[in-house]
Image 1 (cartoon, rainbow, N blue to C red):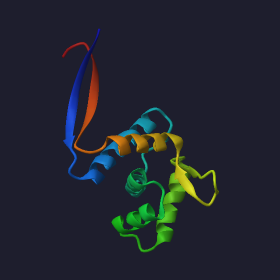
Image 2 (spheres, helix red, strand yellow):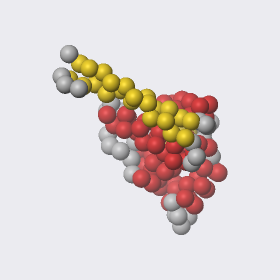
Image 3 (cartoon, helix red, strand yellow):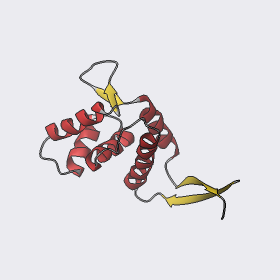
Length: 133
């Protein structure tokens, strides 16, 4: 018989970037586990996604990504964005193929974070265990 244990992890939100980064990593790991993503994106790709989840796919977010990663020019960010598009995390905007946006799943995730982050953020973990405690 399976035993179920649940516990909550309370994260006081002092550094919003780190919280969003943690949530993006959990999201990406879920995408890999379910087969929607073949492998975990590189750390640079994850950092870019954190800024896009926080600010949307905007020139401001691209600029912040470039400064955070200490990249020499915007073309380096464009290269990261190309990789994100190749794996399906960014998609073409309906307005223009030149513009990108987060995929639908990430957009919903972004909206959830935007509405819920602040104060204390709770992640509920459930562990399924066979047999013994």
